[in-house]
Length: 147
Image (cartoon, rainbow, N blue to C red; front, side, top):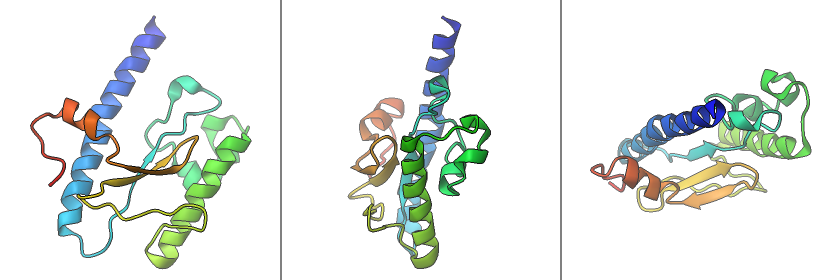
């Protein structure tokens, strides 16, 4: 019961702070940006400890494609985790080289307030349009995330 309560509290806090702040920041930044804005959500649950899910900063080992040294992996890297790491690191390298994170495998459109495109890195990588809009409306009903 304590683990379940911890999991529920963790999910709620993550949703209310992380997702809300990310959506607000993206929406605000697009209006002021002089360059394209790209949004992503890392939602690949830790294969070695599924109860941890995807805690803050968990994606760093994936971005740098260095899973074997990640203490959360216990030194064991699954094929699925490596696939996500390959996709993320390729996108970051592409962004560093060109200013656009799209690769030959993943097409990543810029986030706009009209499309609200968010790249989801998870078991199935891909762009989600209007990702979490329904959740955001429930968490912060008075905030206009569309403008």
